[in-house]
Image (cartoon, rainbow, N blue to C red):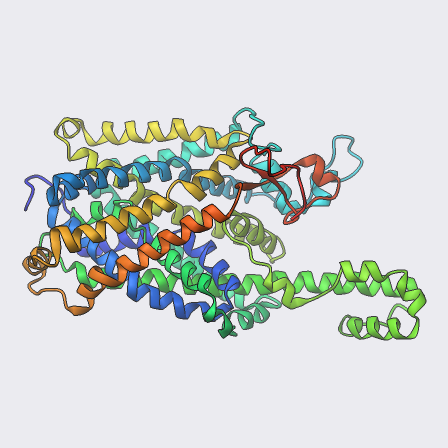
Length: 575
């Protein structure tokens, strides 16, 4: 199956680093910690690691085997297995195209924050002055400086998806830069990508290690680490915890996009992809756990500051209401004094009872507040960074790390488009430089829509709906095709693996491919369909500056119906 003239990775290490750079991405930093927080801290690791063995490893192994054997991109590889499966490869290309259109927007945001980190005062650390120059902007004061900077300065977001504004010039330039960097890294195919991954795959670990040292030394970090490593075992009985674990493994490894098939197609024919599949999968999961430790240290720091700020507000309220001496109530005794004054002076305490209930101070509640995605990456982390000594240094390190994680994943995403298309004769006549440039420019032009004032709402739609169902369906058809069409029964796939590795796959791999993984994927697919049907009219989070100024806040966001319905009212409401 050797293809004359097909380039190869310079070494197996380059291939491993390319897979690590692709698989280890933003989801490890902002999705996995959220799921841990949502499902009982360290207890979530049990279903997560089980799903790694039942689903992640076998499917990762399968895609590498297909790519290395056929030495073609996704379209050519599946067409070689059966002419009827060519559409499977095409579906992978289209899904990767959807992802490329919006994924580089995240890298544009990272560039934006990185450039704004080189200021004497971080712009998300303070509220801007209002137009009258009389004080801070009211909208920023009602929310927080970090929220205001992300939604109003970074996105210049409109109040709904129906309000179309112009392109945000700064964001558009950052997006152009993100695509220019992507193009430079892929311009010569695996020859340029192979050099880049040495940096994109390793440097984020250096930053995470630095952040780990800084994070565990932050005030209150121990509260976050205790929260993570104190498992709530009752969550093991929660079906959604297992479903989320399976979903996280599936998407974190980047299955179904065709990137792994494309990368493996550049391997030497006898490359030991089995060991590499195990190593990359373990590195990916280990990174998620490592990043969670760093994140929960930051969570602990932020939650402790918020908790103590709350205690201080309660202390001042009690001192002023009951006319007590300044040193009568300490931070440690606020909760005791609330109970004591409520018992001793019930009538006077009743006057502030509503304020006490609204501002109830609870460290556990602060730690329970789960945030994922852009909210974690660009708001929660920014909030913590501004309170650190030398915040500019930590900001530069963090957003540079985010940028490398995003670009590393983009290299895999764009390769999943370019490699299968280049396998066609008509495309192969074009130079690498020209063809790669045309693909990047095409994606850039379509991606500019995400830099408009309503672009973030479209970003959310693409992120939530563009790949979820399609990827599950693609990988389900893949594993059925390999097991029952190509197949394990006829021992063709086993013989292919034996031809490449010198031995056949053991019983574990065969049971996973033939039974366990397909059943899990079918279960996930059914779950998502049921959830979609039961979810009713889809809604999205909207930032409405008039409503924010009237008291609405994030996460007290306004939710607006995605589609108008005569049955379900679409009036803004608190959540």
